[in-house]
Image (cartoon, rainbow, N blue to C red):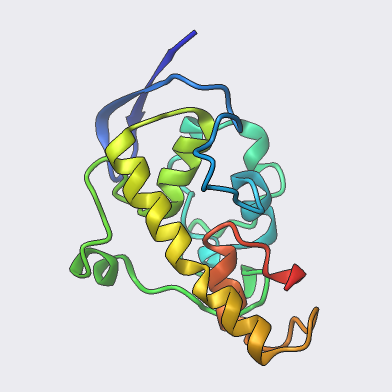
Length: 168
């Protein structure tokens, strides 16, 4: 049974979307993230600043152990303790931000995980996720397996894309 979600946060007012699939299921067969949004938030991503004003949209249990910083980005909250993302203005300038998901790929993933399906947008974001995999290869080529001190910035960036870089 489909369910409507209405978003009213700092970046979207009155945005509505429908959840048409069960949460965490029926993903595009090419899209196989290692981590759920809840796991990513608990590990520490985006300096804790990413989801501080939109928690009402997502399950409460996602935020039970989330590493958040309501005031400003704090890289020490990231799993690897290092800044590994660019400011939103850079994302916008590069054309990576779309009206449906003004916070970027992770917002898309959270909504997709919850069951929203927008075929054209899903295709674009899944292609972006697949392209990030090149960083996995760079870590495999340049680091000993399991050496999480090797290429920490790249490993943190992969966490932002639901790749579990601790296993590389």
